[in-house]
Structures are given as structure tokens and as C-alpha cells.
Image 1 (cartoon, one colour):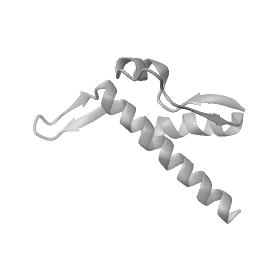
Image 2: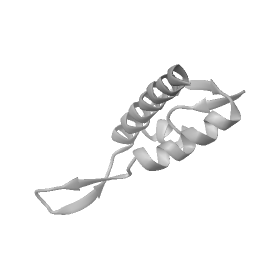
Image 3: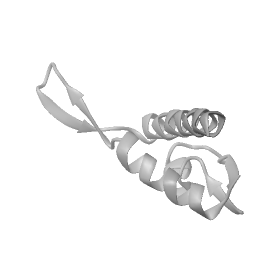
Length: 83
């Protein structure tokens, strides 16, 4: 088991999160979660008014990571129930 930061430490620090949450995961789930984050967390947001992509703020990114983690947990629970 490894401690996995739900919001990466650098982003948590930039977002002003004093104690970012961690989850204890097996190494396989930790690797899967990193891949999940790559697919689900986007550092840019599309601005339809300006018709361009703009960088997300650290707070927005922290929310993205937390939402992606919650979706990952839900996915794993459903996968486990059907196995």
C-alpha cells in the first residue's frame, strides 16, 4: 500500500490547501489512478467567448483532481461489484 495524494502536492500548495488529503492504495490502483488523472484532468479550459483555451487556476485544478478521484473510486466499486 502507498499513500497517494488526491490532489498533487504542488497544485495543493498553489491552491492554498494546507494539508492535502491522501488515500492508501495498492500500487496497481495507484498506477491506474495516475492514468485516470491523465484522461480526466485538464489543465486548460475552453473560453467560448474568447474562442481560446485558458489555463485553469490551481483551485480549479484541485477541484478537477478531487472530482476525478471520486469518479475513480465509484468506478472501482462498480467494477468490484460486478466481478
